[in-house]
Amino acid sequence: MFPEYDVIVVGAGHAGCEAAVAAANLGCRVLLATMNMQTIAQMSCNPAMGGVAKGQIVREIDALGGYSGIVTDHTMVQFRMLNRSKGPAMWSPRAQSDRMLFARKWRQMLEAHPLIDFWQDMVNGIVVKDGRACGVRTGMGLEIPGKAVVLTNGTFLNGIIHIGEKQLGGGRAGESAARGITEQLVELGFEAGRMKTGTPPRLDGRTLNYSRMEVQPGDENPGRFSYTDTPRPQRQLPCYITYTNEAVHAVLRTGFDKSPMFTGRIQGLGPRYCPSIEDKIDRFADKDRHQIFVEPEGWDTCEIYVNGFSSSLPEEVQYKALRLIPGFEQARMFRPGYAIEYDYFPPVQLQLTLETRLVKNLFFAGQINGTTGYEEAACQGLMAGLNAALSVLDREPFILRRSDAYIGVLIDDLINKGTQEPYRMFTSRAEYRILLRQDNADLRLTPLAYRLGVQGTDARMERVRYKEQAAEAIEQFFRRTGVEPDHINAYLESLGSAPIRQKVKLHTILTRPYIGIAGLRQVLPGLDEFLRSQDEECIELAEINMKYEGYMLREQEMVEKMNRLEELRLRDDIDYYQLPSLSKEAREKLSRIKPRTIGQAGRISGVTPADVSVLLVHLGR
Image 1 (cartoon, helix red, strand yellow):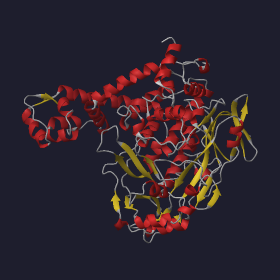
Image 2: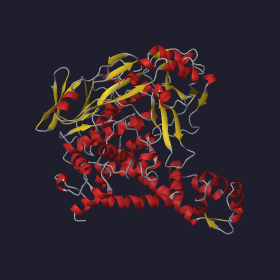
Image 3: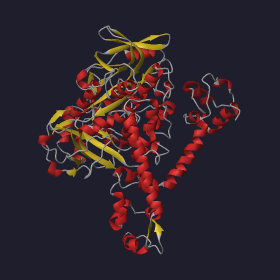
Image 4: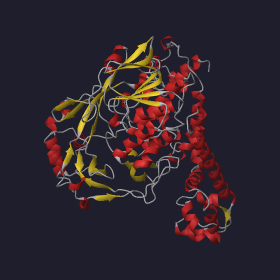
């Protein structure tokens, strides 16, 4: 009934969709197996993509040939570039999406790929022979052969939904949990754990009083995620901000004795940086209010997502408390918030390719690895899909370093440090933030995808070359063009910047604080005339390169120093227990993780600089 697929992807959430596309775009025949074809690419929680560090990841996915950015651009209802008041390393794109259009667009793009097949059924087991994954078993008793398997089960592995004292088996509201896979993997020797996440109630937007809230419009000139010619939004929907208060908190506290979080019914840890409303009240008892973001679910629905009010309290407590929030006095609830507890597998059991150490050609991606967030899941799916395909094709694996991408930081953190709570990406986790900006993801990563042979990257490489050349031309114009004092001093003094006494190159003027190209164009007609023919994206890149040149050079020097350690390879068969000079913890961690390089060994939690020195001596360095 089934051919032998090159790659079988289990689960069609954000990780599974990107995994399927990545493997197919390397020429592999892919089967995407999901319990429900109607929920492919479902936005289970908030209807948004991007945000701080997450927006950088979406742009990196796009630069590597993934679809998340393209889908978001086609379905967004609002776009905002966050942190514009800070340096460009912190700028982070974020878009509200139409939830239904997002899932529909993803499915259309998947179905348009000739190498992707679909099967609707629960996968409850992996076919493993001689230590290698070679297919899956389904709830209908079918065995589907495949050369590699990617598990992207999200919150479905033995999922339990909690609402007050009620417990419901399920991986998402109204959907069954997945059973069988955890038990089999544990029998094979994998370590499993439990994690928790949650979602807020959904409200009827027709019953809200928006005049009592702060409006949060999109950017006046909205951007986009993809580096391809995706559409820019012609109109946008506003979001709104309101706040809880002491009355709201008092009502919520009446349900604490029935909260599964406080009574111990939930064993798994929840996301530290996206706590439930009851957790906020408990942990931040000194705060008399908390911010609530009122987000539309799409163009053609009145459903509202109440961002900031995630809860697992009894539904009647949620409803009573919601109606005390300004603007929510007449609110009607579509469904209550809930918490969900599910199985995950500590990611130190994986290699940097996201292939498991115990079973060859078995890959994990997404929340099964202990992460939270669509973006974190999607980028893991992309990398797992690429590496599953490369393994089947008997090619070298594709691994991103910490200096290459936020994706590299995320995977390196997971594999070397593990996680006991849902892992979320932040800019602070990356030591090379100035190099890993959202505006240059295509320059960093598209050449890598092009060399891999990812389908569709020929045209993307042409765009990259054009962008690099155009930015360089702009920079050269600034370096060779001088400006006279009487042409610029009035402008400089208006900004509180010291006037010049002689002709100075434009590049020198631009590097001053508070001076930008947009302002210079207004007072220097020759500059404006030159830039009219240039793409705004290239102008922005050139400006960042010139203003932050010194910082970027210093970071690049750091990268080169660290890369020397990355070039020192460690054999897989090293017996670390035979190196008595290593600390006991280092011997245990190194034996378990088996780092590929000295650099990776040094990033493992518990491995000290002294331990790294011992390894260098062992290598004869």
